[in-house]
Every structure is written in structure tokens, then in C-alpha cells.
Image (cartoon, rainbow, N blue to C red; front, side, top):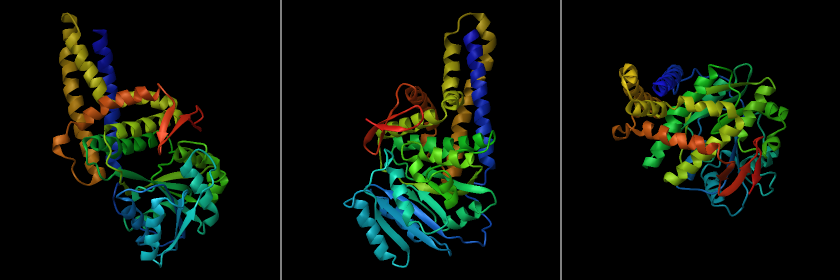
Length: 388
């Protein structure tokens, strides 16, 4: 009887957390037009690159065709002059000669975080007061900078970031990751903002004042850390800056990967969060609604005697409600983020995501190594990287 009661409580708590996340996400004005500001400050866009895939050209081209009346400078940083990304950037620069764009070879290695090392070497080339840092796999809508600057120019805002969605979930494994990114992650971020002001940044696209970056020591102060976006936002908040989220969404186009690739990505992400916020990450298991519903169902099956019978009806109802709600809520949040309905044949995917997510949560505590861009690192307790 005790296990049934315990799992009934845990399932109730998890269901309440899920309802909380869904409510705050539903209220957020995602994708909704913003009344744009008349100000058009100069913007320098920093894009660290390494390698390319089928989507790289389209992703980068979206930055060349931005509909923005203010000055825009595009800075592309590549470590290896023979990197195939160089040819794509040069082709785009020839196609759009009126765009202020520069390709910079950043061969010096400043630290284990290659992305931040490239950003630090791009700093001397920056011409504008506001910086936008974006990953190579990000594709933006034409009015992206208009909306981003409207949010960023609000008084007191030092850093503005946006939500991102996995734009091309083709395989089952990528649909599993789409539940994590396009349904759970952004709703969890909004939930955390109801408890305290945001003190971390989302790395897909970040706008930051140049002076704010200088106050925290520039990008060079972050070259040793894995979670550079987390530490960037955290240090901005420590200098009394405020972080805001623009409701525009950017697309992340990833290579088609299988279960092994998705597992490695999710494990790296999990260990990153665990290092940054260990106690919050430990407590995050409470939000795994499918796990606790299945545990409750199992306890109902194996519990002996008539004493347990008094809880069977309540427990059985909770199992059914919890599993149904989890699938409905996750698919609804995916639809809100993706602006199209996920395939009905994959209605069950949130359950699989939760059950596999438990093993990823557990594995995050069973090691401190991550594989990033083909290189294996050990993550120290302070978040710094050491190459293995």
C-alpha cells in the first residue's frame, strides 16, 4: 500500500508540473507579431563555422537577405582556410555584393571551446554596437532583426535571446528529439521564469550590447567552458543586466541522424545542464510524467491484498489521465511551436521520450565526458572543459 501511495503522490506532483508548464507556454506570445520600433541600430552578426552539410548554404543565405533598414555587418569565422564552409561564404558574398560581409580565418586556438575561440578572434572586426551571435545551423525569417531589436531596445535589457525549433524531424529518432526541443524545452524555460528572472542565455541566436560583453571580459573569458551560452547570460545578470525573450522563433536544421547521434546529443545536453545547475537537474526527474505514471501502474499490478484495493481505482484513473494528458499536451506544444500538427501516427512519441529520458537523466550522473564536434572532453565540476 505504501508504494502505491508514494507513486500516486509523485504522479500527482508530476501532473501538476506538466499543467504548470503547459499554461505558461500557452500564454506566451510565440510567433505573434510585435509592434516594431522605429529605431534601427547597427548590428554585427557573428557566425562561427566548421564544416557544412546540405542545409548550410540556405541557413547562411537567410542572413544575407534580412529585411532590415539599419546597418548590418556579417562576420563569418572559420578555423581552417580549407574548410568547405569557406567556399559557401565566398559564393554568398559574390551573390550579394551589397551586403557588408567578411570571412575571417581564426586559426589561433584560445581554449577548448572552439566556437567561443572563434568568436573571441572575431571581436576586433566588430563595427556595430549591438552583436548577434548565432550558430551555423540556424535559419532566420526575413524580419528577424526587426523583431529582435524591438525587444532588445527595451530599457534595461542587456541580452535578448529567442526560442528555436528543430525544423526537419525526418526520422523516428529526430521526432523523439523534436519532442524534447519543440515541446518540452521552451515550456520548461518559461516555467523557470515564473520562479525567478532568467539568468542564462539560449544559444541559437543571442543579441547583446557590446558594452555588456566587455563588462564580463569578452568572449575570451568563456573559452574554457562547455555551456558558453549559459555562462554568458549568467554573467550578464551578475552585472545587473536583464535578459528577455523575443517571441520570434528561429529554425535549426540538423543533419539526419539516427538513435546513436540523438542519444549522444541529448546526453551532452543533459551533462551540460547537470554541471550548470546540479540540484535543479536532479529535481527535474519529478517532471517525467510518463515515468511516474508507469511506476504507479506497476505498483497497482504487484500490490497484494485488499488494503491496496482502496487506492486501485484512484491510481488507475491517475495513470490513464496522466498518460493521456502527457501525449495531448506535448503534441499541442509541438503544434504551437512548429505551426503544423505533428503526425498522428507518432502520438505516442512523448511517452517514449520520457522513458528514454529517464536513462539519459541517470547517465548524466554516471560520467563527466562529452563528445562535441568529434572531440571528447571531460567536464569539470566548475563547467570547464578538458580535452581527453
